[in-house]
Image (cartoon, rainbow, N blue to C red; front, side):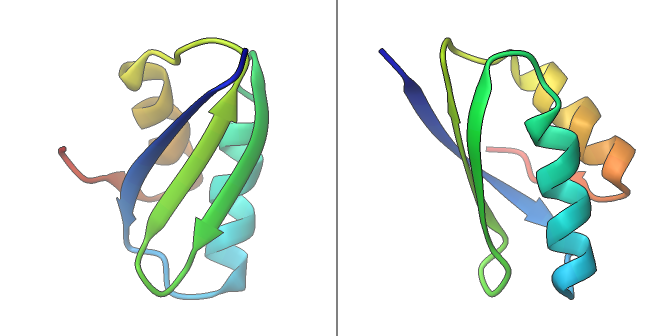
Length: 70
């Protein structure tokens, strides 16, 4: 069973931003798919198990962007 969560990431302005965020989130253990909507900043992550939001926040920070508080 997979789990899908959406997050809002601020600061993304181009395809390079999308690639950086996608790469960092894809490296998290259990992540199967990452979809980024550049226009809205919404990132949809599908994983094998629920992700710890602090891990998601760290990955987004590592990419150079900010996870908006939900």
